Length: 118
Image (cartoon, rainbow, N blue to C red; front, side, top):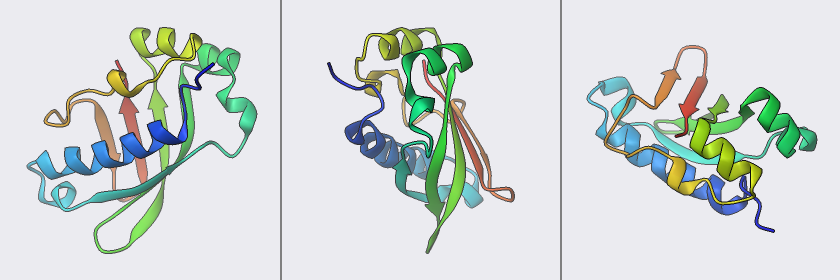
């Protein structure tokens, strides 16, 4: 069975975030790029039970302008993405459009990024 939080999804999210940041009118965000999304340090945090119970995946993303820094990345799963995760399906179509900026919250000072999947 296919894994929902796969290397392919991490690469997709990395590029999608970079494109989303480019569409943001805020000058601090506009030049940012994402240079990687890692799986969680604790493997059990990707189990279907854990993700269903917490409705989130907590991991690390590398974000920056000229050089990237590790950011705490929290991926919140909505109803659609939670259902797809429980079935082992790809989450790529759960990521909102890159021209919208209401699906993520970026705290540059504290190096935190939260994304909300559909």
